[in-house]
Each structure stands twice: as structure tokens, then as C-alpha cells.
Length: 153
Image 1 (cartoon, helix red, strand yellow):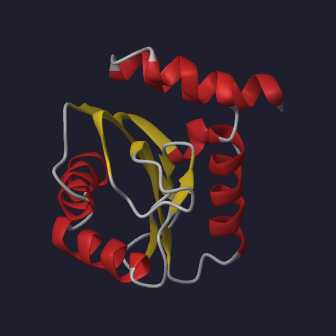
Image 2: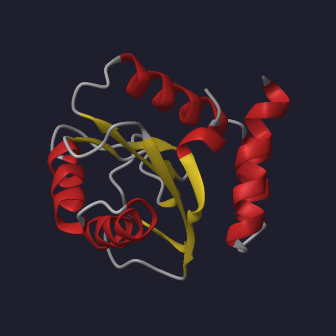
């Protein structure tokens, strides 16, 4: 699995700020709607429901919010870079400025876990995160993300 298979260029966005985790999820819902045709409010509800089980802030300024949606037939993702980090309840208590959201079909099983593992491995690389933080152009961010895993594979 490669990030280019689950991430579209139009699903990569930069925001100057989001006032809260909920506001970020609303922005993610809007992106999911425009990039993948997903219902924004259903997407936000699914993210909030998953987040209520435990925060998806994995540390080092990175969050991996994810949810299952019955309207999907494959795993899709979107990437958000925040110019101003927000509190996300991350495991290391650091604010989040990188969020990679994943959405999977209800019955995705292994595919969802593979995608989550791929994104997690990718964003665990400090040099890659530094490159992402140094660029605020969505097209450049997409290139950095999609070339990172193909080079490491």
C-alpha cells in the first residue's frame, strides 16, 4: 500500500489555525466532502465518536484521527497542516500541527489497519515531519508525503 493510493492532492490542506479539535474535525469534514464526496456532518460525528474512545494524537505534534464510514468502498485519507498548533490531548501533551485523517469502510478490517500503520510509520520519521513543517504549499506537501514511502519501500 502506498500513500498515493489513499491520498488525493486535493485532500491536502494548510490552515493558519483551528481553534479546537472539534473545529479541526469540521475542517476535515469539509475537505472529505470536497475531495471524496463524503457527508461532512457524518464524517465529523464519526471522528468525534472515535476520539471519545481515546485521543488520536500520537505525539511529536502528530495526530491520526480515523473513523469507519458505511458509505465508503475503500480507505481514503486527507492531510492537514496547521500553522498554529492546537491542543489535541496527545499522549505526550504536545500540541498538534500535523493531522492525517483516515476513513475506511465499516468492514475494512485489515486494509484500515494497514493504512493506519503506513501513515503512522511515515509520520514517525522526524526528518519527514521537519520537511512538512518547512513547507506550507499543499502541492509540495502532497509530493513530500507520497514520495516518502515509495523511497523507503
